[in-house]
Length: 273
Ligand SMILES: NC(=O)c1ccc[n+]([C@@H]2O[C@H](COP(=O)([O-])OP(=O)(O)OC[C@H]3O[C@@H](n4cnc5c(N)ncnc54)[C@H](O)[C@@H]3O)[C@@H](O)[C@H]2O)c1
Image 1 (cartoon, rainbow, N blue to C red):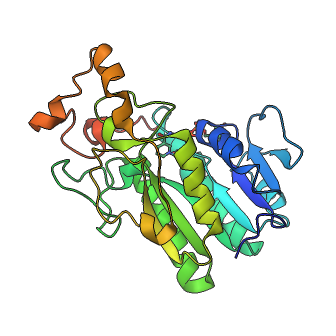
Image 2: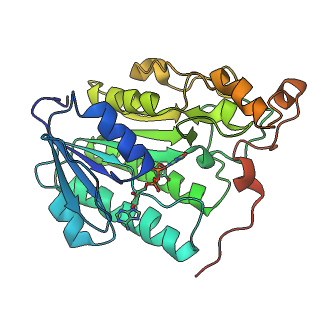
């Protein structure tokens, strides 16, 4: 059990888009937040401390973990960058963060996985975290690797974890696909709050979406976690239509992309360097 009053929670990637939403949504309840990133975060609240660190610097990462009970690991590189960048942060950095957490006695890990962990499933099939992963890119492969490490940590060391297969995190949905995959700022904070508050999530993988009418998932493990998203991308349908987006195409069975991973499933892999 993680105590929001007394236990220290470390959020990595705290200067990023999701990290910023988590700070806003968690800091009134979680009273001891340690934030880390390779760039500064603005306007620290009285219950937030900030530690600048590159997650591929093992010594710095070990320093970060002191007196931490729960880790929310949001550091990652996404669409842009080379394979070397991806490996540096999403593979080597991930390994060092998880290993340092384990060795420091961290009891719970919440991890930013991605819908690209199953991005090669056809969009015509509804998916569940219980199905085997089908990553659509090396980005997705490394996300699955993170989930696999957490499975190993649970089986060998009883470290509880939740891997969040995040869809499209934005202030608002941006295209036809994100009408199905949107995750709002308020809902991501509620989701992570559930992951930290749950007495014993075991080793859980959940879909990270808002309560969208067009969800293409089943058994996302939300009830297990107590996650009850409030936002629905459909609210933005007319606004997207006004921007010239064919929001009605999916109703005709014409999806923008034939796989869950969207453009990732059809793009060339990033350059090595
Ligand atoms: N935004 C989405 O739609 C989405 C979808 C699926 C998964 N995710 C995952 O969620 C996580 C957070 O996403 P986001 O949208 O907030 O990304 P973001 O790029 O806004 O934030 C990532 C943060 O990681 C930090 N970072 C990068 N390299 C670092 C390093 N070497 N050392 C320390 N910090 C470093 C960056 O400075 C940045 O603040 C990522 O792991 C991402 O892969 C995001």
